[in-house]
Image: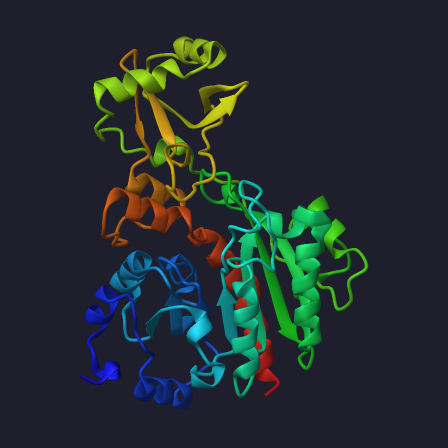
Length: 390
C-alpha cells in the first residue's frame, strides 16, 4: 500500500506519517498571512493560544502520544508525525510565521546543560536548515525554550542562535515571560522573535531600552549583539486566578500508605504553617520532592502558585498537592485536568491517554495565554506589517 495513502490513525500507531503532496499544494495555493508552521508542536497548546490570530498550515512532533492530543483538538490533516531531520523545507507550505518550541533538555538548568549544539536541543539547527530550504523563508520566526537558553554558559548558547538568525537576514529580539502573569503557575520561558530585515517594524512594537520583557539575564545576553530589537508589548493586568481556583477538590487522594509517606516528608516548618491554617475552607499547597542534606523532603509553597510543571520522567518530577480539608491533611498528585488548567487550557480540551501521557502533554508545552498574548500584541501586527509591504 502506498505510504502516502495510509490513514493518519494507522500512521500514528506506527509512529510515522508523511505530509501528503495534495495537501501541500493546496496549502501553498491558499496561503494567507494568518497561516503558520509549527515545529515540535507537542500537544497543540501553541496552536490553541494562536487560535483566532493564526491557523496551522503544517505541524509536527516526534512523540505519538503528544500527537494524539494535538490531533484530537486541532485535526490530523496538516500534522506530520516524525523527526524534523527527515524533512525538506521545499516540501512544506508557505506561511508568514514559523514557530519552533525546540527541545530543552540540553539547556535546562535541571539537566546536564550540554548546550545548544547537543543532540536534543541541537535540533534547532535542523529547524533552521528546513527554513533555509524553503523557497521563501517565513518573514517572522519564533523560537521558544527554557530560561537556560539565555542564562547558561554566560549566554553563549543564545548568542549562537541569535547570530545564526541575523546571518539569515533577520532582526532579533528575545523576551523572558513568566506564565504566572496569567495563570497560577511559576513558569518562565524564553521567546525569541525574529523578523526579516526587508520589512519595517511598526514603531509601537519596539522600545529604545529594556522593559518588563527583559530582565537582567536577557540584557546580559543581548549585550553587544547586532540587529537586536527590544520588543514591546502591553504589560498584562494583575492575574485574578489563584491555585485554589483550578484545584479539583473532590479528586481522590493517594492510597493511605503513599499519603502517609508524603506527609512524613514535610518539614517541621511547613507542617507548622499547615497546622496554623484556618479550617474555614480547603487549602492546597503544591510541592516537589527534593534531596536536601542527603535526605528527601517535600518542599511546599504557600503563595497560591504551583511550581513549574515538568515532564513525569521520575517520581520527583510529579507535583504533589497537600490539601488541608476539614482539619485533616491529605496528599495526592496533581491531576491532569489541574495541570491543564495551570497551562491555561480550557476544560473542553481533549487529553487522551494515561495519567503520565496527559501530565507530559501539559508539562512539556507553552502556556496558552502567553502564546495568545504574543499573537495579539506582537506576532499578528508583525505579520500584518510584512503582508502590507508585499
